[in-house]
Image 1 (cartoon, helix red, strand yellow):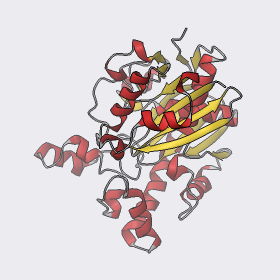
Image 2 (cartoon, rainbow, N blue to C red):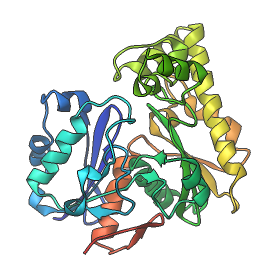
Image 3 (spheres, rainbow, N blue to C red):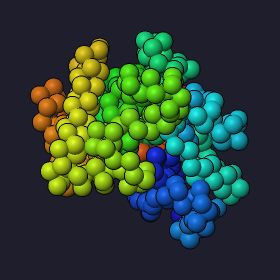
Image 4 (tube, rainbow, N blue to C red):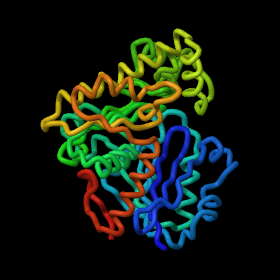
Length: 337
């Protein structure tokens, strides 16, 4: 049996998908980033309990902002873990670094997926000129999964979770995206407004601290541990707390605005809209997915994918690179022999 693996370096957890040579799922698991950073759990122990790592043909992985590379690149050719800096990515726990080091130590054949940034020539030049960074590497992975799952060549993908990033795909290629710090709000992260800029200028907060409190948590007045923020907001809303309800409605509004904005600049006729992430696929206890769908399905069909889309997409990238020898993924060049 041969295995292909995918990794999604998320805000609160790092997710992995393992598939076999028939593209059937072998295992899906998530590792809490805080527990990884505190060395309460180790990737190398967990993976060895699940499969024989010598049978892994390729792992496609994501890490942090991914702004140090612009092509899908073998890990042994990557410098500085494929990033320019760890700063600007929200709360730093060190959990992702621990996993990265374990993967290197275990000598698992791996490629690193780039983020969407101004150094990526496959992006529309207007996005490259306007924004230094458009999205982290897992946005490539979930876009690939959406592309394979739906068959949409021209679509907008809204990934709604701790942060929100909407991605524009045309002709099967990623053309641009709206990063968490410039566009719609997520549960934790969001764009910096005037008051936050003033707080930064006055020294009350660092830019990273402001970014990490710029999501709808600020509206709901929730300042709990990062792993509890979403649940605490939902709990408030379920108990008809005015701030909690307003936070949910504001999240929905900001996502709808971003989708319509990207739709307005599309060159091709749109095939569909894809909602994903823990917020994008949420129907219970609050139907966030349905609230967004109601407003955007007048544009085109809306498809909902699970919050595991990033890890699954990464595993499919590994599969198609190693087994099918593809040289491009969503317009991104692949370096692999």
